[in-house]
Length: 429
Image (cartoon, one colour):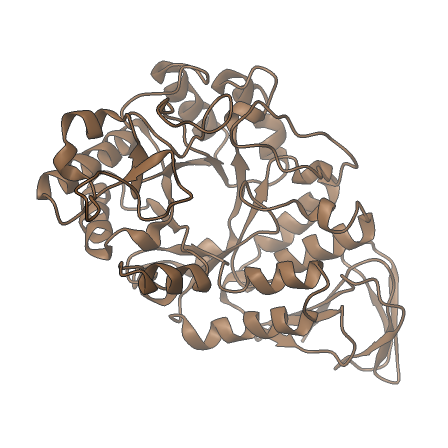
């Protein structure tokens, strides 16, 4: 959006699925861990949906949190509305913000709105209330053309949570919801908190095409920036996964990052993440190779945009928790200190306002990026493929200190011998 501040690129989000965050799976247990979360350098605690889950057609034993029965209520598994208010207050007390998941493309099949206002919902050619995506069998879609009353109701819900102190909204499959609705809702929420942060879960380009091909409206990420402050990195995420699966070279992913500069607004903010509730964890992709994990983590931070960690990522958790069952993540190696270093670096103004450049090395499996302004330059070299080789750099020969390890990096004949560790160099101009 035109008024989006680029300082949002300095933010670090921490994604929490409350049900699977602790044995109790409650807001109160999350409160007990806020000091640790804050110590990581987190700016925003982002919660997956917190509302009651529908029963009709539910998936798994406990159902999917994205199949919402009542937006105005709290899932009793997690606590009460009073508990949620306490969580908001405790997050604010620690100088962090809180963001919640908003699911406005659909509700559960037995939702309060579906029962009270069936006219708000999408119907197929047989006049049946249903969803446009067959695999989403536990939900039914809204029809935003049906009534302005629907727009008012959904906006009033956002206003209610903003008045409680919610600082931001992660909007599920926002590409499916009319941009004019988001503009309408944002205008109302701005009257409560003009600094509300709007994060779009825009969808993969292939999914955009699929939805359009079956005859429905779906917005691209470029269009999403008309109203949202931040968008997911789903335009390049397929290249990231394809590299990890051995299907494509790393350069395809790096070129995708470069292309973002060409196709998005000047003040665009991407939300960079290696994993989330929908995708496998980086530790599982690289078979718990700690060196690859560290290099990927550092590369993720070194890009132009905010960063999101999925709870457990700081412990190299390798199993993606089920959305539908009680399924706690398991702790492996603790890289919290490494993440704290990266978070401190991410907060520097240069990572919001600097000039970013992505280079494509001759050898695959290595990223070579820079960010600079008139005073400073940071150089990042990330050996995500653990390649045994050397890389050509634009630096005078000499010795430099690695910001991440404090080790000495030698440049000889404009080349650096690659090591297992990620490298970040700070050059004063």
